[in-house]
Length: 457
Image (tube, helix red, strand yellow):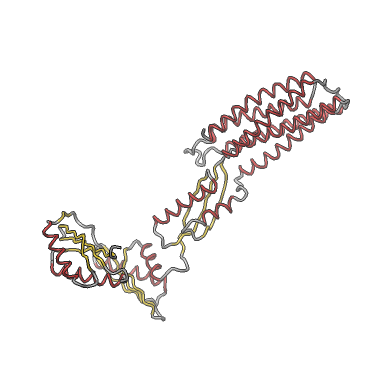
């Protein structure tokens, strides 16, 4: 059974229970002339109105957000609870006025019999069952309207007990017992209304739930990649916790990794709050452990430039920076030089005017043209040449050789093995020598792409 079905079912059952008990108490109260019992019947009538409103509201409040209600319809529950609170205050005022009038005029006590006591005992049992069922449904669904309804019926139990006490006093000869019990019911109703109004108004004015900000902040800070939470706001709309946050993330992270952080933050908040909606704004910030190379890559990325082979030499008094900048191969030299100068100025603004920057302009490698696999004989020839160039050196086991013919020339891919203890730079030097030898021996080879790996275990 879905939470929405639980809410509507409990509210619907409560309507029939409220109507039956209100009618029974009102009829008996009129018959015996008991203001306390009539007051409790009117209280139950207000509960009946509240339950009908709750039943109608919970059918709407769980509807998803639409073009006119971007945060859903959950606050309808708070508005309905506020309306019921107003009715409770009107009722409490009316009962107090009537009770005062009876006490002042010395109205005769009601006729005492077993019937009102039987009705009240049944009413107490029914209200205890309803309060428990509604409280459980409210806790499971986070419904403020159902929680208010549960509070009504719990207060009805106290009201019924006060009426029983008043009838007992009247039966013992204390004529004022019934009117005093009615006044006690009015005070209970007023106290209930005050409690309901406090929680409902807090929700309507978007007061953050107790401890929610601390829990949400801790959940988001625990997400890998989040440096800190700069700002966080929480509010409730119905059963949904809406959280808006600005979180700091490393500026060196690519966009897709930042998106992963957002998704992980949403999962962390959902685990902490259940029904929740997170708006996550990421602010890139510099970390204390950023290297010079990291900072240069950020500058290039923010300028939309492709750079590689960034070298940094620290001479103590100054920094020497070398960068390979890739630009469109068809770009005119003047335009490419302007791009390089802009990059140099941006780096100098970051590190100071005395930094020495040299930018090597390279043509951006175009997407490789369409090609077809070379004939097996050609692949064997290229493979044999690669094995010969590798010789008995550090690079061995040339395998997975592929050759493709394109309009730009032949593209060669191969795998090879090297000692696992070799450094990357050494592997690169040896493989690069093999690639150069292959291009010298076969001028038709446009590009060589190698993949070095350690020996099989």
